[in-house]
Length: 424
Ligand code: HAM
Image (cartoon, rainbow, N blue to C red):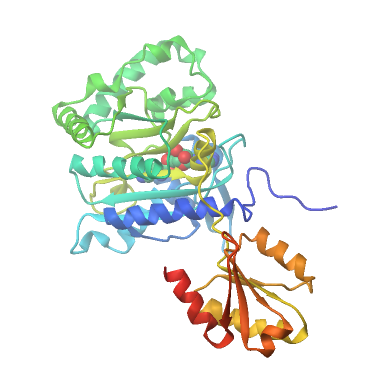
């Protein structure tokens, strides 16, 4: 019996992987411009990091983590997200002491959630995310949002919607929490088992329930925006002012609560509103998490960031019919005729490649015509032909595949000649 790939995972094959590489390269390029530096943290962490960081009452921690005991009897979890790990590293490596503040980091790598697989929802997916730690200035919230929006826009996406909300500071959230308890308590029996537990632990999570989302009490639930104190209100207004200044359109949605517990003040999501995009339209999510560093044993540190998955990014590109320019073709295919010429191309191929030219030759002892066909398949810009006669005369015949023009070149100066062509 053959063995197949685990549910909710995918192989990314040549032909598709080039899209990933383009997105990843663009993300790195933008991070360079915005001055975010890469951080790589382990793929697994202590389970406690996520139960404390992401929050015990979240779906992620309750239902979706890949948790196991290792041989040393430690509880280990494959990371379901990147923020808690970045903050763990920030605390552990004492980055709060760096001369340059805020500390602006980005990451790219696989995350793991045991979710029900469907279009846009995988059990292993790749997130690109950024985290800015150490600043309480709403201008950095706007910067983080603009980085995500620009990445999508620069890859060609147009049908985007930015939704923002404020979850306020601690004081505002306590007032809101009390109002939520008052609102739901009398009829909590009509809600699912999870929501009944959430009422005491974290009533805000009720608003994020997938099962009870159509219950009438959901629509009439008190909105956090009514409970923002003056500081939180001013913070949120400043963010909106900066987004307007940056020409980034947004909508305020008081029901946006996000699925992780660490948020306060700014919360945002970027959705695709392309027609034909599946049921899951959130491309990117993020927000502010002042207090998370303390939660995992560090000093009080404000933080803000976002994460987006490359899987949903590509789905959005497909939904908008955007073809990325991926197959550039190779520079030169070496077609050889006869044993000696074939032998010669082994070294010549190496010289071309070392000179920065992408080049290929035949490895299947194909006839001359079939070699040209192979060159076509590789979208070779030039085919260099080396037959017995050419070799004897120390020449090589170079054909420009776009124009059909052919020239004969001294074999000794061929690599230099080709470099000249590329430089044109
Ligand atoms: P999140 O909303 O859980 O936030 O995930 C962020 C993004 O990851 C989603 O918008 C989506 O693009 C992608 N994503 C999540 N789950 C899946 C899945 N099963 N399959 C495919 N893509 C998925 C976080 O993870 C936070 N750490 C974001 C953050 C960073 N907040 C502050 N800093």
